Image (tube, rainbow, N blue to C red; front, side, top):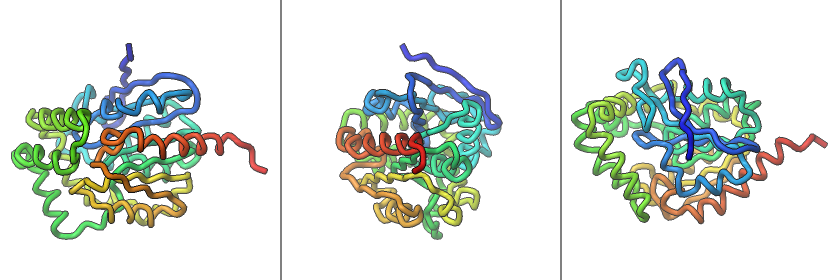
Length: 275
């Protein structure tokens, strides 16, 4: 049985799992999701590795953050930094989906000496927000609006293909209908266009090998956004796949076909002495 651990951070307490041995890989999930999203690929990623999966504050089994009405994506990046520092993780591959992709990229900028590789799945942090996208984020900052819109929004971004996709939609919909879930999501959404969450002017500091996988059926994060991340991160590899926002849930085998060789090469390269 997997044992759930907890860690106190400056933002709040987070629940996480820490299993296996070998080079570490850290899994960071999307808004209103939780670490169980990675179940379809967990065993394959864990083979020969130490695998860590975190629930963001107010998500999954983690309690509400200390300031639930003012906890944005930027603070999730802070949680990730404190987590990596506290556990002294090195030769680390970080795999982030959505807001988890933002936190993963931020780690690659601020903790470059610890990061062996970066896998971004429909990630945020590189979008040029326009008046329409800013207005939508502001609208989703109201708990009543987010309760009403999230079920439709979840189906649009998930573009469900598998039972696992449909289970994610069920969980997200159930979570946003709770007071705590709506409060957590309503605090996150208005933060996305904030200056602290825009990584474009710091992208040159990402030197770790980077693989960007993008679900091209995600109606809320078009492929052109993924290509913008690819352009921003020098030397990155971009793969578009016929899937939704959580590519590893919609097409786990195809996704692993790209990700496993990348992870192995990235961690092996960091361990190899320079010639």
